[in-house]
Image (cartoon, rainbow, N blue to C red; front, side, top):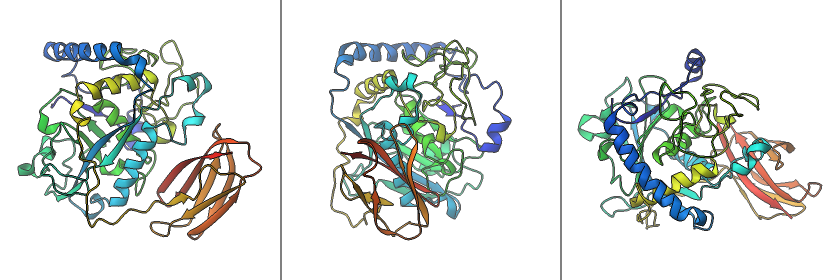
Length: 406
């Protein structure tokens, strides 16, 4: 088994079968392995040194943009996912890591002080390793009908996969069919061959277009990026020690994965309520909504030490290409707004849908069905001043934007 952490985000019917006693993870090669434990201790020393020297500056630093290349490996047409589906996943990452997701105001009050704007954003690379213009997406037919995801072959062109771009400067993401129900696999920094460093995602759980519940909102990749930036599951790396250490101070110990679930708060498995809405649990996508401040510091420490090559990368620079710009479902004409909210609903990718305005507490303040695209005006003068979330759902697509009423 290659030294990667396998996130068992099974499809719904599989998750029901395996939801009992899910205390631990696969990857026994990581724990009770002297070589891994020594290397982990050395990496942990590097991280803790950076945290001790920089923790007071967290929140005063500028946002960091991480360059991404998406390798699509396909054997049948539906596996060759669209550019729009890829764009939807990048938008989800940027919402989740900036705490702009619609679930943020619904997090229980006891956990609200822990919610972190991680100050990380993600972009598709615009320059390839040879200095040429790129869309940041590669596509390749693979002669593997069973599923190349989760195999070593996915990383090597001569084995039917796609070779990684410079893993020190790009976050490589492979999207493919998996033979089983696994949702994603991520490399921890410093573990495994450089050629295999990155993230693999099941095409059935990528983005929020043409995917089905309960893993239909792109949170599989959010979860795996957490691992890529050195976050453990909240129950820690051990497969036998419930309530283990995840090396983050503000995530309560837990002994439950909540795979395939969205429990009611409070849910207690050790001694304190579980932060089951944390992205590093196995809860359903629509149940997730936050990273903690401690997780933020750990990810930033990793980015500034073990993955510092991403900071020095300039491959997100815009270059002259013939690529057609992707159109969002809607745009807010003016933000902040006052008595009227003006939206432009795009024709491309739009089906009949529903638009909602959610309060800071997550309650629906206004809801309207849309049958055709075009200009839309919503009367919001009766709402209290403050932050609101605009949600448009059309088919299997969803877009969320934050607006300020003043």
